Structures are given as C-alpha cells and as structure tokens.
Length: 125
Image 1 (tube, helix red, strand yellow):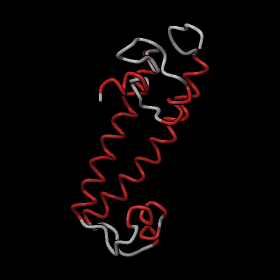
Image 2 (tube, helix red, strand yellow; image 1 turned 90 degrees about the horizontal axis):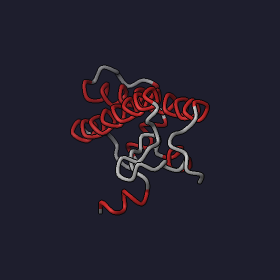
Image 3 (tube, one colour; image 1 turned 60 degrees about the vertical axis):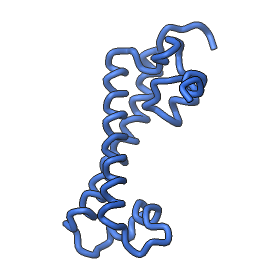
Image 4 (cartoon, helix red, strand yellow; image 1 turned 135 degrees about the vertical axis):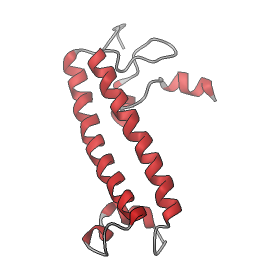
C-alpha cells in the first residue's frame, strides 16, 4: 500500500454506502428485537423473517433476556456505524487510532466501523 495519509473522497463515498446499508439493516434488526421484548407484534409474518430464523436456531422462542442482550449489542453496533459516518465526514475514516496508518480497504469492507488495523488489534490481546 502506498503511503497515503487518508482515503480519497471517492473511496470515502464507497465506505459511506457500505455503512449506510449496514446501518439500515442493523436498525431493522434492532426494531424487530425491540418488538420481541415489548410484544408489540402478534404472531405475524415478521416471526418468520430471516433475522429470527438466525436468532432462534433451535430455540422455539427467543426469551426476553436473550432478545434484550441482542438488542443491546445491536444498539452498540448502530452507534459504532454512526461514529464511522462522522469519521467519514471529518475525513479521518480508515486511519488506525494506534498506528496512524491507513486500515486496509479489505478490512474496512468487512468491518466498516473498525478503528484499528489487524496488527494493532492483535497487539491489544
């Protein structure tokens, strides 16, 4: 990788698009979990959505406690994605907070809210 200090505006737009898609999906999933916790929905078609099929895996019903934990995780994920959008606006997105180097595009495409390179993340362990 060349020694660039930041990603170009075009590259940042690519990441913004990826993040916005993930953010939409995350918000939909969060809303479904919130409905499970509050029982806002009856037994309708949302009970058979792909999200619930993945969440239930063998369980007949997702318990309120489990749904609460998943909803908390989902909310944290949403906050991380929103913070990544702010970094894009500030043009600091994709810069490792430990090394100051650019995080590889491949990592950001998989984990678009990453603030550490793989190397920096492994050093933390």
